[in-house]
Image (cartoon, rainbow, N blue to C red; front, top):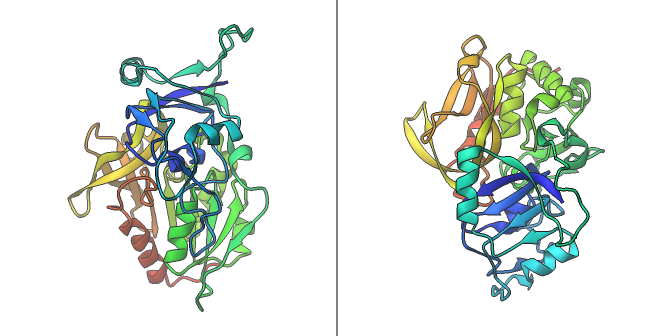
Length: 348
């Protein structure tokens, strides 16, 4: 099994992490030394909206995992199987007894790189390289037909969610705001979006190089043109930046973890965020656009959020829904709701 080797520094949340579509095409190295001690819950454990509580999609998205110590004994009241059993059921390979922190140091020094998990004695060629950057994963992680998620209230307001690999938690948080959610394929056109008469648009997270999402970028540019209240998350942040004329670049080893510090340039408050991305927006490229920096990463000063200078359009590079991770940034969803309410223009 081939993939781009990346690392995540989170201590918990491996079921949410491994089912995050943003990890498509990647072999995930966990830096925390022991993984699997609380097992894996049932996918049938649903929340009030009918969404799985402990998973971010309907299957494991990582190509494989690398751990130091795989716990063979699991103990938790939600546990129905071990991590090893779950991976066996979904035919996902893994390797254990690896010095994951030393591996992480190499990735930090040399950058992310392609890797392969093979069985001892396998005839699989080690020379066959996997080119992650050239892969468009959208057909694999996005839905092919629209899906509707209704709310148990009298509010008929609809949010269109452009699915470029969305997490269930994004849908959940939009429903919590009182909206109904229409989830559309990644390559939906502006006319298809407008046919649902939405009060706002959300462009989700997802895997791969944003520059390959040509159809989504084109649609996003039309959304900006029409001043539709919009929220971009992770990949959605990059897509909105590209649609607005900015540029993106690949980070040396990405940001993947649950304790990444970011500064809100409006409030001057530092927040702890959950992140999972290997690409970012070039700060200098925003100067000639209508977007400005909203959040910055404390560690490396990279762009972690943008907002339009005159239109109700915001985006963040981190995950305000967390899952797993802290909920410091849930207010981003409230900010989006405020923009929707303040927008008096009728979308047509």
